[in-house]
Length: 71
Image (cartoon, rainbow, N blue to C red):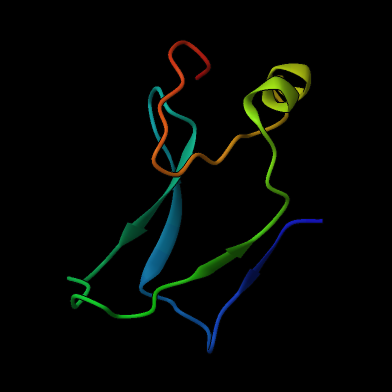
């Protein structure tokens, strides 16, 4: 089960739907360099497992990677 862990409720961050890339986070204000924003706690899977699971009802969060044509 994926979940979000935050120190306190952060109303200045909003989830939004993009035109081509699915869902994202948007900040109302500038974020100071080094400031804690949010911690994602979820399963880490490799590219092979991503290919098995990808579907319109699932999402894939990538960090420092780019997957062409999956969105």
